[in-house]
Image (cartoon, rainbow, N blue to C red):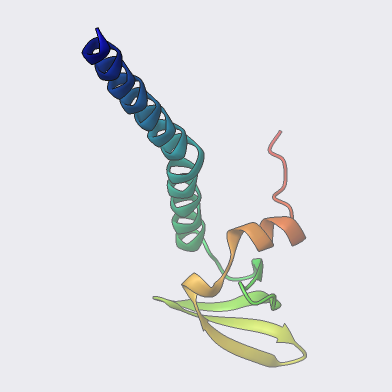
Length: 102
């Protein structure tokens, strides 16, 4: 009788461990993958004249795109060369919201 009760506890604990793992996957891993995919798509679509914000908070307008290097105009004839992955989609969308498509 005691053996059946203990084996039931093992199955119950195993179920809760699997449930916690499922919650972890759906609340952390899947959204992170989605953000990563959006960031990669955003980096691929960068073009001259686009206003962007870097991960460190520098605002500027893209002047030139060469492979993974972007020349950013940050003021009166002041240019910075940065890598594409230094531009943040989240910060850019927060400062310069995307225009709603009608």
